[in-house]
Image (cartoon, rainbow, N blue to C red; front, side, top):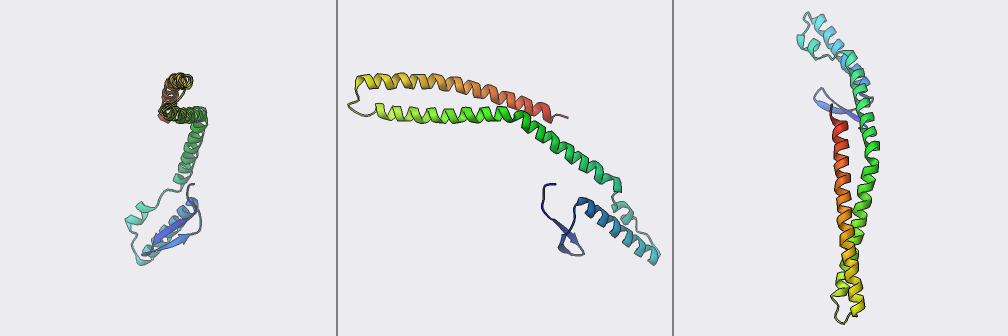
Length: 156
């Protein structure tokens, strides 16, 4: 379900395999039967052939398990999407505020800055610090929710 092509390693070589996992299972069964017929014709049936032949019913449960697992991952991704989007938005806002703060600090370091502008920049830096602290708390809470939701849906 996650690959584009299959390769068959057999008879001392590697060759492309035209088919899916069900086709591969059929191929294995045919090879086992051919080997068993050849062994019967020669007078002996090797035990390895019988043991190496996978039961035909195992492919369907595995496929269903993979399908169910994929659906569970998709459901989890859908359930966690709002939290992941919220985290991304908070991170983006924090980066924006950090850049603004750096600009203001650089401006305040300039000699000859008017006292009114200096006070205004100082107030804005204080406001950015308060906003940043609240956003970081929000980020931590959202991240904890995301982890709890992820852990709850991945437990058997």
